[in-house]
Length: 178
Ligand SMILES: [Zn+2]
Image (tube, rainbow, N blue to C red):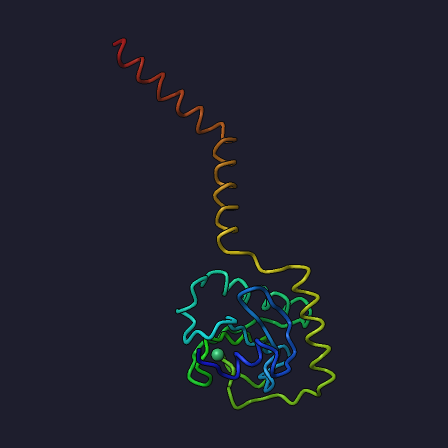
């Protein structure tokens, strides 16, 4: 099986500041961050493109949880998601927290790397980890089931709908009896 630098990080043969991990995905701080908290999210398996990832919804739920963590724990103003894929031939989503006057444009400028001391990188990772633990990524399939259940409950509780059915029935009887 093909291996690359992201596979090495996922296998922990190359050390990194890992902020999130589950059975399929791992998120770690980019060593050349475009901003504090810049994270790379990858599937653990060596998969070429993001759209080749089978559990695509769950993959992006991880990116979302990291983004929300950056907003909460690092006070990011907003967050960019970037997925291109020519740099390393292993699916990856860049999660880039954005701040006031951070030297980037609407999208991050890829040459504008921030020098963040090692100690600070560790602190950033700890903050993000704690925030993600408080608000972990939803599993997309589970979230859909939850939503369907919510809709069902609302429908069952809706008296208006019941009433309208009775109304229709009443009207139908009225018509039949002439
Ligand atoms: Zn790989």
